[in-house]
Image (tube, rainbow over all chains, first blue to last red; front, side, top):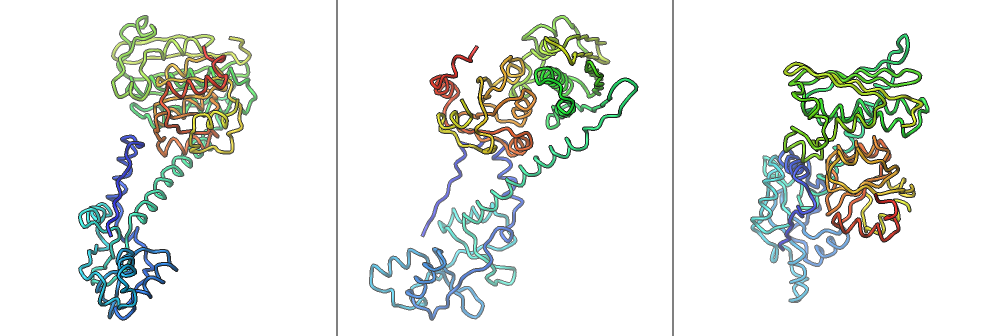
Length: 316
Length: 115
């Protein structure tokens, strides 16, 4: 009768596990359970139950009498009855009477605990008044979690589309199109939004892809620098007919030794940032490499200002 | 070489972007350091990485990468999948380790693109 399920966590990283366990704590049994429960009465025969199981493709049937749960018949019970020639006997004689149940308002985590402790793979679900309102199996839980995880992806997708949809129109200035982005400290989630938006703008102007890439990369590195090192700041982008000018101005610690900061491999980034694949001390030198003109000014303890210029007809 | 051929070679699962797997792959960039990826001169490359964050997708998007392979059976977070769909970037998962994945693709003739 026992079914066991173990989460194969080898394929999940820490963040996935935390999402899954968070979802499982939030979820109540009533949100996950199968509601249309197929039941039998004690007067049915095990043969009847066998047919129900076959037709409905289920492996356990609760037994109900006068609206009360009085037992359960599992696939194992049926197999045993076929073995011993007792398949014609009544449910009343052969059902399991001591049924492990769960209430509809408890968390899925508690229900899974219950399944593991009892060794039962399916638990009839009762409401506050003790009526049978559903049945819960591992599969119900997995199916619901998959749907919820997919919703996380859909939300991320929508968010990305919205960001792209709203920010594409810059205000046309006297000489070019001006765009402005707020960059917040530690806001890794939105890292690259400015770059991605400018990339899209330039694509719509048919700027050659290699030039777009240099601008996008330089901006992304600058965004990352502000997110990682500064207290936040702004990025001003002006698209002229012949060039793109980016000014990244942040509040923050400033750079003690600009020459040292420009050196490849030098970094003051934290371990967390390095785990994300950044902070290798190559940002500034990469920005310089991508730009046609590059300047950095910094005042220790106050601000840093990067000026990046890329020619739109560049051959770099 | 296409993404599809790379996926077959790596016995990789296509997580999203199935409709783009016939896209050509001109080079491979294998790295766990996004700073290195951002500094590469390669174009239309397949990014092979053990990093599993939304920033990997952002980096690939900005670099115009052809697709991403996550190695060692790692599965990208849902945010990354959502982002990849918007930018039409196929995401692949293989059980192979980084070195193994590189060897498999090198045997396909992609080694001449390696730096």
